[in-house]
Length: 447
Ligand code: ADP
Image (cartoon, rainbow, N blue to C red):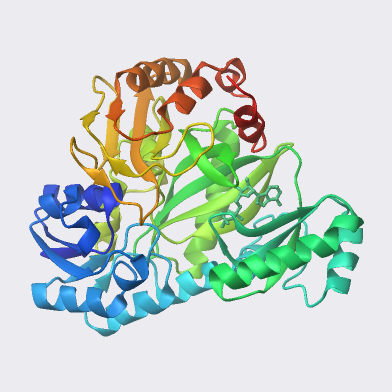
């Protein structure tokens, strides 16, 4: 097992990785920008290294500075968390070239899945169903028109290098196609430096259901069930559940068996998530994330496992040591992503937190790097806390979440806590009958 792990991230996820390392007797190295000198991940880590000024491109994305930090502190592995360099195949390659272990999949698989067109082709060859669409990259607007006429409007133009909901535009009819094509390509070029786009049928009432997988380096692959992440605003997740209120155990098991067999054939290793749209009882693959996901705690709550410890174990070459039949699911878990944003306009609200009080009690978990007196810097993602609850049933989990949200205090900045309260109180949410389009309409309603 590793002796020292460098955590190439910040905020709650850096703390999350630190906690797993500590319990395993592994020392941790935090890296931080000058804006994060007093951040909780720096305070708790065994050692810390400043890697640059506030802008992420000069610090958390600064590969040379991170590798130097690993080298001077004598770390033997690097955990990338999510975001930043976590899905950067070149980074994974450089980490290994410098003699450190990258805690994640191979650079080859990161590269394959980072190109959504290549990812879809790989899944198709494994027999995994896809959303109907273009066979690959769209070479021209004329080709886009022809594909749209075949699959019928509405259609979605998506960036091959996409992420975070960027470079994605809907065309409801032929009149809107040229504009969608142009805007998606411009956004993709600006965000990813790559304007390759493809087309999918725009599904009108799907749920977003994803499957958590884990593979060791000895050919064993298991899944830890599904998460339902249908509550989204601008294609970004706000609330996640495990399991999905819509899926039966038989449907989950069938998908899981197909996916784990496919990934085993591919030689995949470490953690990953396959994202699907689910409509009329059918799954359609949209993308694979080759890293730990923000919403992984809901899976941990229902499976009783620590996914980061599992990542560390398999990265160190250990065998899984259990099979699919050893994994069972108990109760229901919900996560609310609490961000430093106005709960109605979603305008960013960084600044000093005067008072922070975390809720507690049975079945409540808070993953957050907040503390009273901490100033949320304006330079990074607005996520400040993940409030996660577990209950014997979905109804109990919702009641627990409402109670925990009411206890939580983040005073001094605006947060989305009131919005989460409203969602939990809503009858439609409580019924479990919602699609990816539900929340956009919900936040559009006042009061
Ligand atoms: P990103 O990588 O930018 O997050 P995804 O491909 O994962 O993009 O899609 C993000 C979200 O956009 C999905 O969870 C879903 O809500 C919506 N979406 C993606 N593809 C489709 C589609 N074909 N039809 C309807 N909604 C879609």
